[in-house]
Length: 209
Image (cartoon, rainbow, N blue to C red; front, side):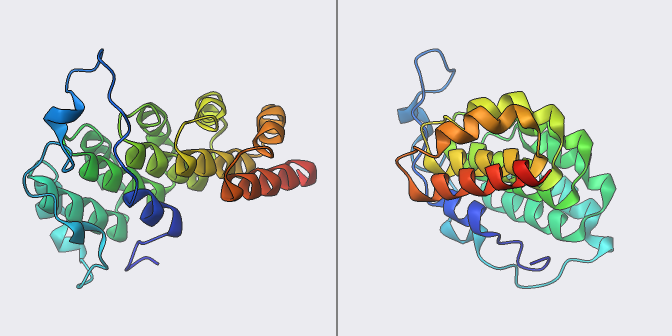
């Protein structure tokens, strides 16, 4: 997993369509297009990393976070593999990249660190216009398990994209805060099977807490 950094949920998230963009947002759906506003957003950015990055690569990878889509997304993933705590700040910055692919990759990478300074940036990413980013943020919050994320996750578990709801339900269960009980109980009636399963598992964890 550390080499591939391809956990199930973010891979699922990569297949989602763009979340609809409202009129109040600065860029329209037509302006973004299927490549999230980038011209070099290839499908291979989530393929297995072919070579294990080493610590000496860190500064170069950090500099690539401001590059175009493919380079920045792959750099995010490699920084997640390295898990150098000094990379948390730059990856938080990458959550603001113009490409949703880079934002999603940065969100996934932050989950590898389990660093609590990433919690609030990931909470904000739960409101991203792109469902892949929101889903990646939810699953990373499931890894970090910080109670500060609970209010935002209670909203995310009602998101209009099923992968976001599944990640949020999983995160709420992992955190184990009793405030999640009513929301997880309602999620047992979700139309999507995997969301219902995550909610049931989360409620089981709450009972055992």
